[in-house]
Length: 237
Image 1 (spheres, rainbow, N blue to C red):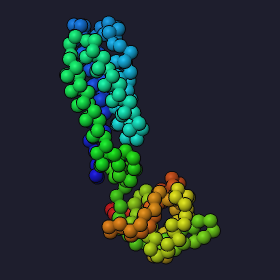
Image 2 (image 1 turned 90 degrees about the vertical axis):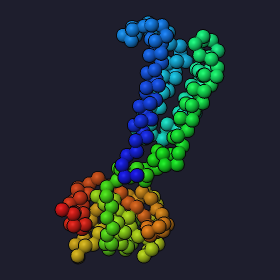
Image 3 (image 1 turned 30 degrees about the vertical axis):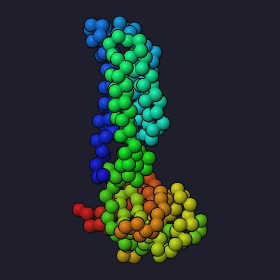
Image 4 (image 1 turned 120 degrees about the horizontal axis):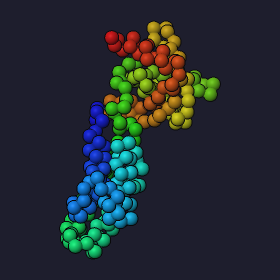
């Protein structure tokens, strides 16, 4: 998934349109002008407002790719079913079959959040590929300095924002705790490029990737220097 998926934009837009449809329906049913806001909102029930707020907030979380949207979805569906049931029970426009069908369609609509590819994007930053810088395969000798210990290894790939460091040369790389800050010295033609970073993930060999650790560079002046150096290392014009 090289580009940001369209799901967050379209789903958030649809949820927002559904929220807006509540006052629009009132306007149509009671033949109000859309600018008669006070009259329209006086016809909305407290339950209508709850559903509208939940729809709007779910739309916001969807667009932001916030995993909290999965906490909100069950409550949203519960209130949608409850609201629609009351409309069918006490209203004179829609019957129970129509309302049940609409509620079921909305439930199926919200289940799309749980599709494997979409679910992973919301829960794991590693699957938001459009946020990451291009990676370049580059084997460079590297030293990891942590707690007075120096671990020698080499990179598998590099980018402007991070590195993947092999662990097959020296497996004690895995002994460093995740999210720990480390100092790195990258060696290129006897030059020693010093940068600071923190460990984002550890993984065993998978596909063409060897076992190793993924590190993200800390935002320092050294990182700005690295952004210039990477052009030389990868021969990017």
